[in-house]
Length: 481
Image (cartoon, rainbow, N blue to C red; front, side, top):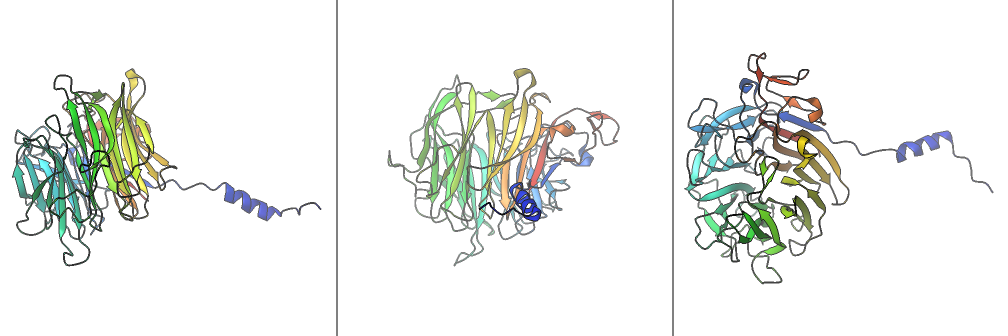
């Protein structure tokens, strides 16, 4: 008996159902240099971003941007309308005329308007660390100095606020850093305060390295804290290093603490099954070259880590290593609190500056910058990849810009890191790139605050007439989750 003929209506409905595609996420991309600074040509590299969970319209960004008035305080960028427009507020101690501050990262408290920062002062030699705080980032009052010491590299700030129990409301502040004044060579360090919002918070320097090094660890030490008190961290544990060549080997080590890093031996709840020491070696004897480069951007080793806010058992990491002439970026996942790890979920050739974030639905965002193209026409491709399962991905190309325009002014060219975070379902990020006003350079669209003629592809001064040289600018991105 022949099958019944389907009605035209049913056939059309079936066709519509099978051809449906996932909606492309909504992207807001903004060059955050204000119109009032349209004439500036600084190398505004190495950006970070912080969104205020208490008011999502309030966002703070940072970069190597000096104070326009040449004062003693470096600026932060701030937005009060969700990232659409930006202004500067010079409240960070230690401005210099070339880069403003040195390394800087920022983070808001989870339950108040308090903004924390870790910086290397721009007015001091010898890697002078300040840990800072302000209760009103829009005020002209300079940020308060909580910690001040020398010999520290790449401070990286994370904050968690206790949501229940006897310590409810306390800000837990963690600043990963490379403390080069440690004579033992165990330089990977986390400065931790269990109550950072009080008048005079106490800090503990936690030395997280448990193995012998050739004198130091790699610069990046990255903590990530779950609301239930599970604290993770990742660092590059150096095994060998040659001063002359800049070449060395390192293990990629992940740490965990199950109670806010508050015990007598913080960050010691993960033990490597092979050597019995603190911290699981996810990758061993990875190669790096501290004198290496991709285009005009220096290399040497990137790491990133994020814990899933919906499940503290799940954590993702990214790290770089040298494979012959390639600088390879790896992405891995653990589903059992860092005990065991997947194979590479992503393996990307000649890419760096990884940023990781997970939204409140468990979706991962993976930001990076990759060098592509023939030697004479190389470009930096900035991408954000999104996934729910680690196997199927949505890829957004945010920028594709010339790799050697503008000219190099200082290290780092783009920065030793970009940044990505999630609040609720949405992703917020920032990266630095060449600022030629050319529409095809920004496939998802872009908004410039600074004056630009998009027809002639020319930057313009404050008078909106005089041409301005191309430079490196920070770009804010928001992607709806």
